[in-house]
Image 1 (cartoon, rainbow, N blue to C red):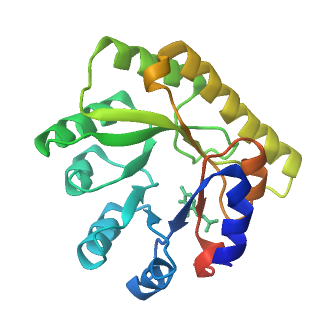
Image 2: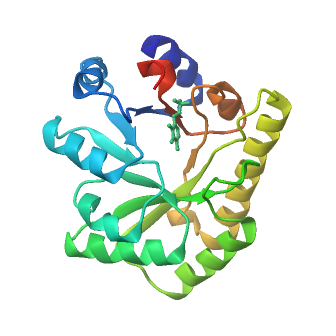
Image 3: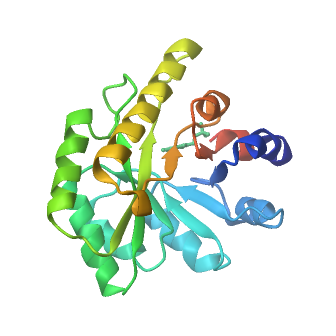
Amino acid sequence: MLQKIRDTLNPYNAELIAVSKTKPDEAILDLYNQDQRHFGENRVQELVGKYDRLPKDIRWHLIGHLQKNKVKYIASFVHLIHSVDSYALLETINKEATKHNRTINVLLQLKIGEEESKYGLSRQGTDQLLEKVAANKLSNIDIHGVMGMASFTPDKVQVRSEFDELKSIYDEINKKYFSENNSLSEISMGMSGDYEIALEAGSTMVRIGSLLFGSR
Ligand SMILES: *Cc1c(COP(=O)(O)O)cnc(C)c1O
């Protein structure tokens, strides 16, 4: 399955984030031994444990909702936080990154799907956040792009239109808030059930769990 996914991603030049949440270390090492280096987790505690035990050249992505008081546990090593959904969280990440004398890469999570429970910024909330970012230099964070989840539905037309919406917001904010020499580059969208649609819509990073590791 890993090879099939790689073959699908290859023409798009997209990155595979193997979502290893709830899966044991051995399952991660199995993919690691096939040269997979990017892994995603959605819980801080589980991420920290795996970071401690597993090879240090793994690039860890935090893809789930992040509480401000937990940023400190991952600030020294996290490769990319996909789930920034408030300015306050961004400030905390900046503060913790400063303590470790590093820059932390982040994505803004936008709400595109229909399901009520989903976290993420609204279109308007995204503008408000980016205006604050422009006014306050947060020197230890680097906003690389956006992340979103489509509705959980078999309706491929709807899923495609939600991914198209995220891509068009990405294009808009990139033009409005980011200069040519620090422009956005990442759109994290697509999971096991919809990653092929996401790639067609412009995804640069897919987050795939169950297709690689089996159901949870
Ligand atoms: C669990 C999870 C995934 C992976 O889901 P699969 O359907 O198993 O591929 C992707 N993104 C986020 C944010 C997740 O929580």
